[in-house]
Image (cartoon, rainbow, N blue to C red; front, top):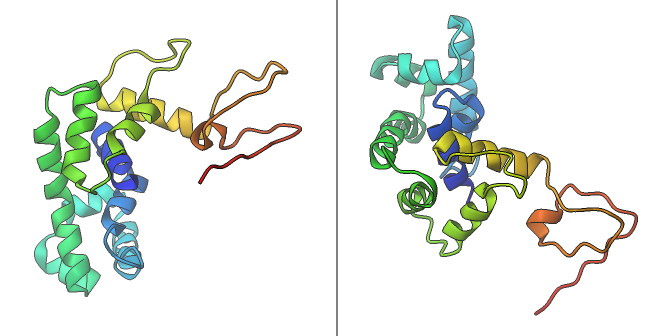
Length: 177
């Protein structure tokens, strides 16, 4: 799920350094932390953001900066894979865009399209209109950062995703086997 969410964030903003850091860390137990620390230091010395550093590195510099074949491969592949995804989603919106992202990250999670759909669905009050990647990512960020339920003194029944970060005087958690 985090791969699909990260891909959505990168489609929305190709210069999102936090999303790039996540994208580059997938598939490695330590998230390519050593190579990333060296890459950040290299970028800092030159006044680059992470995304600018990825574009600026050539093959010879990448070898001296990262010193790890798997990290070099991941970094070299990162921008290429995002360009492939951008080409696939060109002109796609809403549910179709989310489906393409889910197929691209191929995580084998049959619930992923529904999960992303709920995460990026319009708010009840029409807070956001449109359904391009930037709008979907904005909705997802808002839903994750500021979950909302109608808390007017009544009992609220919510899924775990909707209840995250809410506060209440009393919380009852029920589960089923």
